[in-house]
Each structure stands twice: as C-alpha cells, then as structure tokens.
Image (cartoon, rainbow, N blue to C red):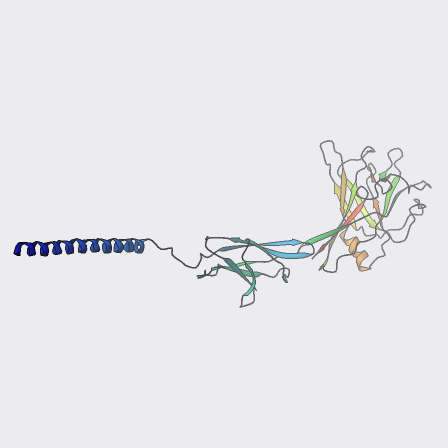
Length: 321
C-alpha cells in the first residue's frame, strides 16, 4: 500500500520534471531565436554624402549659359538642390532641384563677364548633406562675325579704254606683257551688326587666288587697299574714269608664299579702319581700290561673275557680344 503510493508520487515527480524540461527547452528555443533576430545587423539610415558640382561657361550666339554637371559621391540620395548667387550678393537662391539626371543648363539671366557662384546639396528622406564648396565662374565677352560678298567687282588697266566688268577674274599689279598698271575695284553692302552686340571689332578682306591663271609676282607681295571717294559703274568704268581714293591707305598687306613653290593661294587684308569709317559715316561706302606698288608683281583673284558667293572677294566683319 505504501509502496504503491510511493511509486505514484515518484511518477508524478518524474512527469513534472519532464514537463518542466520541455517547457524550459521551448522557452529557451524561443528566446534564442529572438536573440538571433535581435543580433542581426541593422542598415544605418542617414543623409547622403556631399556631392561635387562642376560649372562650365557655354555660349552660342546670342545666348550664354552655365552648364552644371553633378559628381555623385553617394548612392542613397533622392535628389540634388542647386543654388546660385552673383559674386556681390550675400544670399544664395535655389535655381533647380534635380531628381533625374546629373546635368542642368542654367540659362536664367546670365550676364556677360559677371561671376556667379554655385553650390549643391544632396538629400534623401533622412536628411540633407552639407553644401558643397562654392564654384565660381563667368562667361566673358564673345566674338561674332558676319560675312558679305562683293556685289560688284572689276579691274582697270592704264592706257586701256576697255571695260572688264564681266571677266571671271579680277586683276591687279603690272600687266605681264607690257607692265601697265592694273587696279582692282570692289564694292560691298555692309552687314547689319546685331542689336545685342556691344560694338564693332574689326574687318578683314579675303581674296581667293584664281588657280590656273598665275602670272608673274615675287614674294612677299605688297597690296594696298584704299577707300573710293566717288561712285563708279562696274559695266562702264575704265582706268581714266576710275573713282578717286582717299590718300591715306586703309589697308595694307605683305603676303608671303603659301608653299615651297612661292605660290600665293589667297590674301587677307585688315581693313578695319576703312569699314569703321563706313559704319561711322566718315566716308560714303563707294567700295575700295586695290593696288600693287611693285612693278614686277601681278596677281588675280576670282570675281563674282564665276563665283557669286564663297569664291569671290568677301569681307568678314567682327563684333563683340
């Protein structure tokens, strides 16, 4: 009786131990899993790294702008804010927010030769980076140009009553067969300088060598350009009826050879003062006369009769904007 009771009590104790052990195992197992979960590394959430901004001045007549290029120094930003100020201003002003792309053209009120400072900041949902170091730059004065081609051209020969207004080439210098003085006559309609320009800069007369009709000359060649004092007609002018010229030469060039054969392919003459006088109204624009003072020089260039544009004489007028 007592033994039976004792065995029952032992069984209850043993069962309790087993149950307690099982519970402890389950609890420990759960606790361990939770600890494992808690021990997993968490992603650090923070503001992005400060970016870098490159600023390049750009221009395409008549516009100026600043090309802004972002150098991204992190991979967790959601966008960039860019601010600008003039060199003499204290406050930056936001000009754009970039969320797609890393370039931006700032075309708003860019004034020539004014220095602008830029800075950039990256941001995400956790904050913003520090502002970048300031980048300052400016777009300076630019040079533009317009070309015009001869509207009439011819030449006259001393002692000749003939008119050469329809010839394919324009001649000047001393005629190879008799040494007679030959002078070129040209006229141009001046181009209109754009209203946004800040002033006339200069002018250049360009002549294209008439290949295949080379005659006698020595290098360097000397060519003088004079402004004409009165009107003339391409289809009737002769040496004796040629226009007068202002005594002061408004253009002069000493032209060397363009190759080892002492060949002169083309000629450029600075006639800035002449064109300035025309623009300013100091003298009427009656065109110009070209003269070669050396008695052993003769040269010719293409006329508008064979090349109405591109190949005939031209003037390039330069201006600043």
